Length: 176
Length: 111
Image (tube, rainbow over all chains, first blue to last red; front, side, top):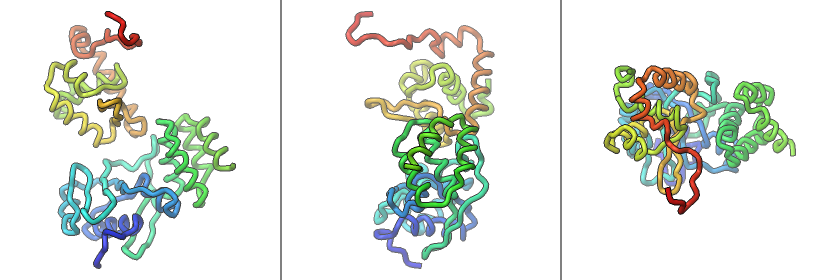
């Protein structure tokens, strides 16, 4: 498949990377702000694709360099592509909760495994809880407004993380 | 004490330092441990890549602190706390600056 990295969307690029690595036996999961972009239909635009993997970066490098991606530290970039691909250390976790279930999307460039919308909201709220990051709160609200999410599950998780007050703030903003 | 586990003598020192001081920059750590700056910077980057630490710019200085989102944070902090308890007093004083001033000092005030 010939890919034009100059004009590719974040979602298509994420799926291309997932599919390419997966066909080489490498399992990766998309997390972070890129999931927000996908679930908010780009109302928040991320240029950073964070994938969690247990694979050695050398192995990933050997696959991605065939597609023009160069490695700098844990990140990969392609001179014609506006996005940066970052491989984050495992496990996939949100606060103290280990994540086992993922969402799978099919796109024109392949399949993509990523956080579920509910876990994506938790992931953003985690940054709001710990660093008072208002941008992350806004992103959580974007995803929660556009997607079906399990608020009971998020409330239970927020309680376990000792951030019920901040969860209440999120809920109040969401219901406005 | 746990150098063999981390394969790096700076890791345990940095973890103990952060238990006591919550945040640190590379220069401060290299002074505290009387070590060169480069290996300290490399270790900090490694701990950040691993997800245990996060960093922020304060002015022109990159300051490292615990990542509150790291799932094994409590366990690693407990290990570092216990290591500190087992250190002899002279090492506690020399490496970890337990008496370091933390309260504010007004700009321009002579010592």
